[in-house]
Amino acid sequence: MTVLVTGGAGYIGTHTLVELIESDHKVLVLDNFSNSSAKSLEKVTQITGQDISVVEGDVNDKACLTAIFSKHNIQAVIHFAGLKAVGESCEKPLKYYQNNVAGTLTLCEVMAQFNCKNFVFSSSATVYGDPATVPITESFPLSTTNPYGASKLMVENILRDLYQSDHEWNIAILRYFNPVGAHHSGLIGEDPNDIPNNLMPFITQVAVGKREFLSVFGDDYDTPDGSGVRDYIHVVDLAKGHLKALDKLTQNIGCVEYNLGTGSGISVLEMVNAFESVTGQKVPYQITNRRAGDIACCYAQTDFAESELNWKAEKTLTDMMADAWNWQSNNPNGYE
Ligand code: WQD
Image (tube, rainbow, N blue to C red; front, side):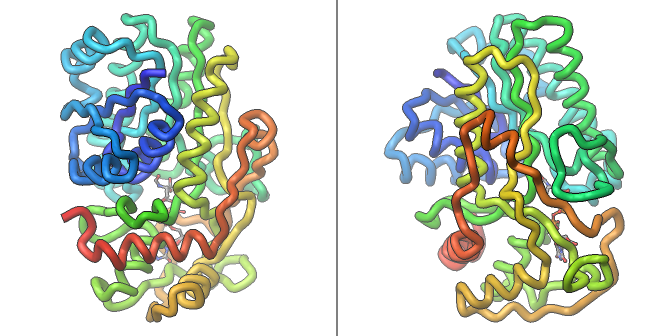
């Protein structure tokens, strides 16, 4: 298939490009590089041996999208482009709704205009809010506590309405749990702007000496060791899940949601200990207050994705730690 990958220069986008190319798909990247570097695409070329066709542009730019679809026979879209910092979304909600919601509306309008109705959407476990129980299945109630999460849920609802209006659409909504790690080559990885919001890049930046210590946001949650529990999934497993979802679209699935996680919950302190034991690198930390908006525990029920997509996360916690460290230690300043 010829696949348009929006946000393809980003963390999950680049890892998915590698899997797409290695599965003989033709790819075209649309990225505005607001939260990524074009250098990441050079690294994808180094890994795959293939040059990457890329358009520098924004999903809100209808003329740009129209030009892309006029010139290329796009058969499917994997839509990563969007803003994803929870804290920033609280400070700048309009920016998040404009990028994440309005941008997706523009993209879907142009897709419909060119009769391209195969769509994989990058959603998030954040749409489950604070679950009453765990593990979380795709049928759990949906609620959000910040504009970033609300933007993801709004897009999900738009896509469900879109499918109800036109059953020619085939839409896979992928709810990511917590992506971590990097391609085993160490050539591509997570390269956050400024101070990392997420746990894993903060751990690796402490280990490489960019940060003095890790703040553990609370150890008084109702969890085995008091620190927050999440479902961390290797980014390569996540990328492979996108390939399976893309294949599934050819079976006229309609509009379907899938949890992409491992089904295991791991605490912050367990992540620190695992990183130290796998890499031999110390990660000094201090227990601080809880972070506003955080929940105690979140991990996936993965049966549906495993059976429907014939996909299961295979990489281990050791792989996640070793690959994250391999990327960070070889790229202390990310994509320079
Ligand atoms: C994980 C755990 C923190 C940083 C968010 C979004 C989700 C997705 C991933 C985009 C929590 C703790 C973290 C730190 C810490 N985003 N932590 N010190 O909050 O589960 O999910 O990011 O796609 O949609 O909601 O991920 O990595 O920020 O936090 O103690 O410096 O690590 O409290 O328990 P989160 P996270």
